[in-house]
Image 1 (tube, rainbow, N blue to C red):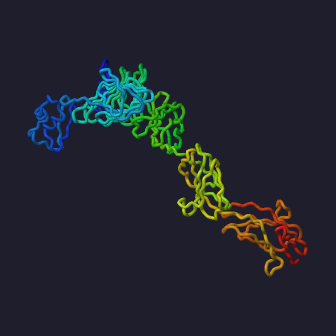
Image 2 (spheres, helix red, strand yellow):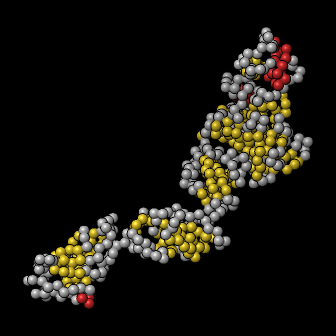
Image 3 (tube, rainbow, N blue to C red):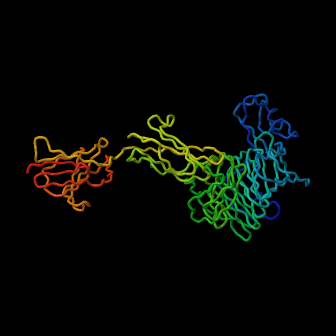
Length: 550
């Protein structure tokens, strides 16, 4: 069906009705009522019809032979003009900041939560304010800062559940969550100076500028119409910009929702910094913060030229952050929402050492961490198999970012954790515990040599054994720098048996190798002098005398 532009005061409503005719048929301007158990014609007439319409007309219109028997599940056709139209009110369900309501009589009053507003009220919000209205059918509207909204018509049809809600957004921006409208008399229409948007159950946004109107559809469908322009039916994920001089209202795809997955869900900062990857095609971003998931009122509503922002100072608690990209044409894209918890306790520092899963090669364990904002001291705990209910070591460190445990740890598995303490003495939560293993690497500083039993030509060198599973590298060299070792052997035990040594000066050393392949340091070498018929290893120099049969 071809739609023509309609001039004059009634063009908005008629144009929208024509645009939505296929899916929103008025079905001959009748409302169909389904009979419930116990219903009578008198009950239905009293609940839904005008007082001037008697029950006999309803009986005649539906050709009911016995008015005393209405089969449950059957239907009654009721002409729309018979329905009892009653004025409805909108209720302020949430408010942030300041707003003024001017009645049809011209009296101003500050808007308060719970306030009831009738047809003709005009609402104006301050630049940093926001408020939510709930209408007779349960639909809701969020009015943003620096906006002006006229409640043009608020009507309900008896107890039918149908409502006729018509709003005029003079300037500013609104978000709408409209319940699915049932019945031919139900309407939800938003007019602006340059366009009109009509829905029957959807989530959409409207902005009224000086010379244009923007509509963005998130769920359902919205019919957008304008004088002397061909309208459009917008599907989810599409928007339209209506400006003077256009011939056609064109659907435009909205930008996708930003990716907020990298933003931490917990912040110890009262005004956290948020950042997210840029959205292709975005010129700006709108960031909104609310204390409730429905975003009935906003603690923050701001635009950012870059994909990051700093939130205003927030009290400790749970908040919801909503971010969307804004295209060059001004249309705002799909929403991304995350939950953010603000914790005013001092944040734990980042742990440095021992790192998670690391092996400490000495029983004398040192802890280290970063400087945390606002912290003047730190509490640490070290636990073994008994867990942190029975810590093996704990303490408080003032104005430092490291600590050495007071007592050595025996070989084994441990966990440690750290927390911050602020100037008021308040201790924050412990950070994540980190697991580490103590497995000392003994430094081989003493090597003893003895002749092998029953064999005067061989000699065995021994040194203190380390932990089970550790291996050793034994080296002998003619020079103290071991640039060209004459012997370089890996052994599984803390000893090695060698054939007779040639005469001269020898340097020897042994290195411990852990089960994970970590190699300990080589100690300073020991020295032996081997004459042609006997070897003297000076006891005072950490060596001994070895006699060899030549």
